[in-house]
Amino acid sequence: MKSQNQETNSFNNDPLSPSPPLSRALGNLELSYHRNFLAGMDVACAVLHISACEPLTDDHMRTAMFCIARRHPLFRMRIVQDQINPSMYNFLEMKPILIDFRHENCTNWRYLMSEEGSLSFDVENGPLWRCRLISVKETCGKTGTPTVAKSQRNCQYIFILSAHHAISDTAYFKWFMSDFLQYLRSAQRLEGIGPIYSHPLYPPIESLLRAVVENLPKEKTSIKPNPGSALEPERNDTVLKKYNVQFTNEILSLSGKRLKSLMQTFKLNSVETGRVIEMCKQNEAKLSGAVIAAMSYAFVRLVFGNENRARNLDICMEILVDLRRFLPPNIQEDLNGCPYPGVGSSHTEQRFSVYPSEDVAQSTNMWKAARRYTREIQENLRNGYYLRNIVPKHHVPVKGKSHIVMCFSNNGSFSNATSLAQSDGIQICDYLSSSTIVIDDSPIFFVTCHTQHGQLYVSVIYTQNYTSDETAVTFMGYIQSLLTNSSKL
Image (cartoon, rainbow, N blue to C red):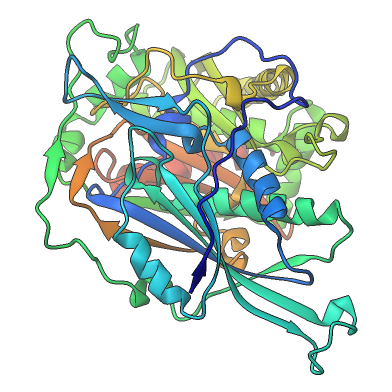
């Protein structure tokens, strides 16, 4: 095994970046949701098997990592223990931002995977993640000569990403790896180099790994906010209070079980999807805006049940959208002039007037909300949050519920059920930890949507710590009925 020295880079002096806007606090989804639902994991790894027509260089990797670090704020963070209250932890940005990247040649990459599980992180200085690009095989056609056509060359690599459990979960890893693969393709495309392909790994990588620290004692720390501290929401959230009242018994029965996150998915057939898209065109809304409006009304129906009267309610949510699917082509370009394949964030708080589900006003208002969401998100993304300039201002992940009750993404690779994540051959594995920082500030529901073969797929992700399977199915059913019924007008 031949290993090169670890390389460190800084992204602080980017001459191509525009003037930074005012910083805002990182959202709950950006900061707190991306952690392992199964508490007790110290190191999580993602594996990607790729092949290229030309060898990948360190410059290609740096370009891809540069783009990733600009748009994924958790990969710029370190963890600092509060000096006043040792039971609290803060996420702070590294300055300068460091990259832990190694390019290696190795015939036994499975050994390196096992080795990753025994290496921890310098959480206070960062980074909280490591990247390894492992050259597995390079062939130049049957003759082995460098004169063969480029299309016959086959350079194969294993890309291993390891992260501290506080910033990792399966969905986020898959999203990150899909972004990384797109950026890597863009980096080579700029030089006129052929395509990069991803391949599945068989057998599943989990069966090849061992929990290297499973016998070590675990120290679990609960984080509780002090009354009146910055950890508590600045205002009372009506929706969260109503949800807690409506599902008190369910929450109590699930509390403390620390079960894993689950997902429910439904799809609309091509005819139903066509109706929804046509209504979006008539109302100047994106398909994402329609799903966001439907999930908002569905959540209110879940809270108020079948009460036959109008209701007004504030809903605070966080929205992550695939810029390539949401923004006009003229403002999609990344710093290198390539279409940006990554994620943009929008935070919104809306007041909804909710009527009985049979009322025509329900559908009318839902499409008004879809148009409002679409315009607001587009405006937020145009003005931009350049994530490298965003700091976690007065925010510490806490044990408890966030005032952001729902999150949404139109990036299909965030869903375990989508073919995009499966075709990219990404496999995830976890290692048991010797210490755990408890961060439990996830939203009640995480909703994703994507279209495939003319059909709309909507997934509802939830954690069993707070929501039962029955409640999640009910919520999903409301979304489905709202989309189908409101499109029949």
